[in-house]
Image (cartoon, rainbow, N blue to C red; front, side, top):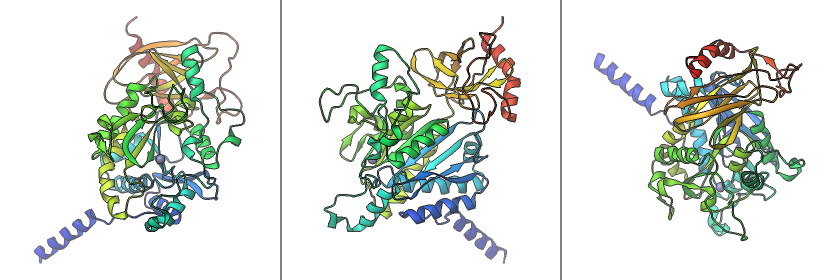
Length: 464
Ligand SMILES: [Zn+2]
């Protein structure tokens, strides 16, 4: 009897551990159902929201994972994944749905690595940036030969390639790098909304409204991790010209790309789809130059560091290959998210512990600044090393500290700036502020942080 019972229990456990995960292609309705299914299974750590609509009116749904969905907690970084920007490149879309189910399941079964990730990180997943293109590609599906084997659906419903549709800020940064001028948060052209597609506009408004730190954009047609810049510095010749065009954060971007390629089942081997990329990574422009791409825009207009992941030779892999692809990408998708917890982060406050939004954080030797968000917190990804870091806010005396970054968790570096003139300075308004530019520290985390600040500053400065 007890033997029978134990066999039965073991069978139960076995079934539980191999609970069916459905590896199939998801059309739009199926995708929406899946996002809400994950939300219903994990209501306390997820939220579904839409950032806008496609040309044909389909929602661009995001699934958010966080221990406090819908809320930015100071010092907790924001990360995103974007899939299916090219409608016919469908693996990213399916991997992001698998990842969503995985994060939910693993958090429910108390996988400590996932629980910790969700406690420390706010993760935003946009499985499809181009749902209209996808529907065309999926309708073609197995009848591909009728279409001469050429996949349809790369572009949006206006036949525009969304990864050539962002405002071109590279021209300005290349000029500024040579002649001086702002090295971050380059402004949008005045009439930018009339120049971009609805999907692009939705993404631009999204990345302006959330202070993202790290991102990846999932594509197909090759297997390589591609990092900025995508647009070649030298473009004297029309058409194809490849010139390695590094950002001031080149070493960091290479590291981020390698994290993905080496955690991936085979990307790091370099030989894939008839191409060879050492370590499975490449500078975008040195592969082929493209203008108005999304990763360059993220870097030049926001605080977000984005790379582009090419994940499969076959842009529309058959259903039977999805499980193998998921197993090849799962660890890489998780490890990449964990990279947001490196470098330095902290609060920027005034002498009365009011948060200072829009403070410029500069690292000596790296010609690319980042800024603090609306809650006064900033995040600066850095490789291990010793850095001289300065916080600057108009009307306040800048403050400079020397800080050592280790290989593991980020170093906390808070700034408390003193007013340089007696009259109230111009400080960027915060949305929650209402009546004034400066906002009292509200959250418990920020309050706790303010209390720790004096101690941290003392330690940073050393004795005397
Ligand atoms: Zn693509």
